[in-house]
Amino acid sequence: MPAGVSWPRYLRMLSASVLAMFAGAQVVHQYYLPDLSIPEIPPKPGELQTELRGYRAREEAEAVLRQFEAEQKAE
Image 1 (tube, rainbow, N blue to C red):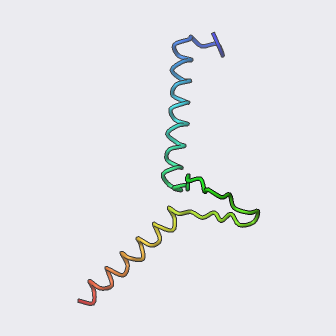
Image 2: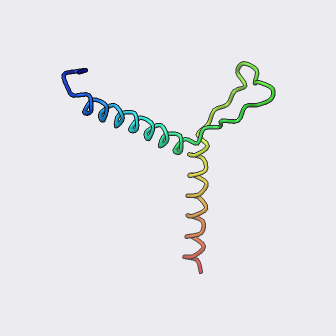
Image 3: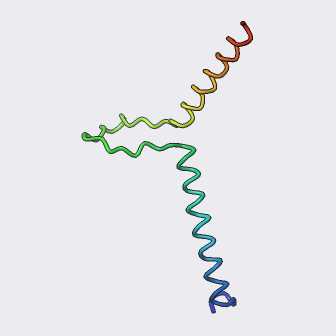
């Protein structure tokens, strides 16, 4: 018995921990929207640019929504 608990309880806790870890990784992946494409020619040192594409998309959507709301108030 690992850690002084029964095998069924140990396996339940292990599976719950693994599932929580996978779920957390998926949430982070969906939030940051990483660029998983592989370029044909690798960038030279110092050329690699990283950005939060999900954050930029969210900012653009909020700007469009604010503009739409401003147009609705003007009418």
